[in-house]
Length: 301
Figure 1 (cartoon, rainbow, N blue to C red):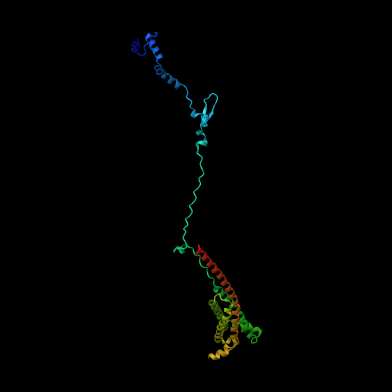
Figure 2 (figure 1 turned 180 degrees about the vertical axis):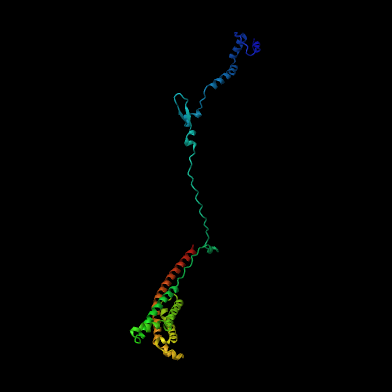
């Protein structure tokens, strides 16, 4: 009957008949043999396993830190740590800029032949002079000499002119003549030359140099009186013999007065110039000592 059932067409009605004796015996044999029963029950177990839900302990929400939100009438919603904003967005760590590498220092032994080239030697101090300021002081001294010499001339001609014509006919013609201009110019030239020669020397240099300035001013006064003899009421046609000039003009009061005033003015204003010269010398000495100390420290490094 089995063969007849196998040959039936698909969709044909199945006859509901009872189990045959052969089928009953086969079922008994399968019940006796457990291996065959296990093989036949395996497909049924597989179907049952697929229908049952599988719960994995490894993904337990409580163990993984997931949040389960239950709502009435809805399926539970599982929110994992990956869905949290703090877990999704990585925390940016502050960027610390790398420190700049320290410049390499070259260490050179002091006994190295080229060590002197690598040592920064301090610059020598600037030596401060006294010549510029001395020339300016000499210009002031020239003005003082002119005033004092004009006073001497005023005393010499005071008895020759009445007070009404003393300035117009007596003093002003002399002050505008070569007899006065030459001594004043010679004093400035002589004192300036002395300042340029002695420089920062002390007062003693101007005490001794005052004689030279006086001689120069005396000679200039003599030349001025020769060129302008009418300044002191002398005739213009007198002899130009050197001995006559020396006796009549060189030993005259205007010429000797110019030399004396020149020497005294040089001494007094020379004290001012010499004091400043000593001060500059002391400052230069201190600067030089400090420079030598710095050089010694640089060589000792």
